[in-house]
View 1 (cartoon, rainbow, N blue to C red):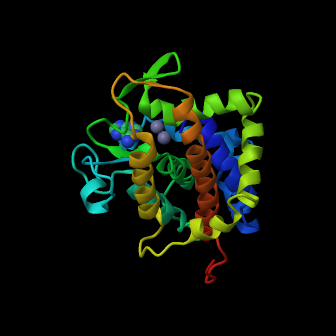
View 2: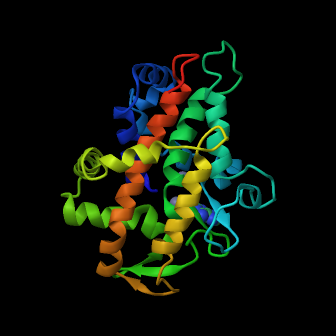
View 3: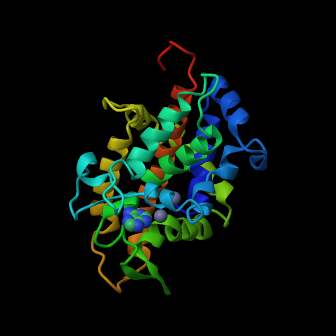
Length: 267
Ligand code: ADE
Ligand code: ZN
Ligand code: ZN
């Protein structure tokens, strides 16, 4: 996602934090955040070029198939295992679990900022895309009259168009609309969003599997090189974008609440 997408994910999560989680997050946030996780939700994108090793941690690609397989897909371009968004979510969650310990040796401020960002990214369908087109980055399209690429359409353009057309160009108005849907339209589904049967540290495997399915069914569907995407594409895909932002926020809160739960108690 772009800045707006990540901001909304973190804002949704913050409201769902437990007391313990709120206190721990406040304690770990850098001064620059002013006590607001959403203010540093895009930090991982800003340092992507300073910490070059972190660049592949924003996504995972499949060899052109509509399913996700951790051991097949989760590696960087040099083939080093676990260097993908799923591995990163598990890794930074594990690091944060050392918070209670006196000297963990990790920079948990960075662990938290990475985790909040990557749980957002893994819900952007094309962050779990095909290797050949780099998650849509090499698919050139026109978004209405502007030339861009399919990946950017899903990171930014759909959200921007929705803000302009429905939300008075105000990200907080869009955020309120999505939060409203979480408590009514999607309320029944929210319990299922939190279900997790994985034996892994987190359910990131499941989020990735959902994303590649959405990439195939919505993002890549009926798209070809140099195509113009407009109203038909926008109106059929905006519900997917809004739901993925909501899911990311709810699940980020779930992971953070679990990490900073009362010791010995399951949440
Ligand atoms: N670069 C290569 N694949 C990518 C993806 N799926 N998302 C973002 N950047 C990428
Ligand atoms: Zn992206
Ligand atoms: Zn990112």
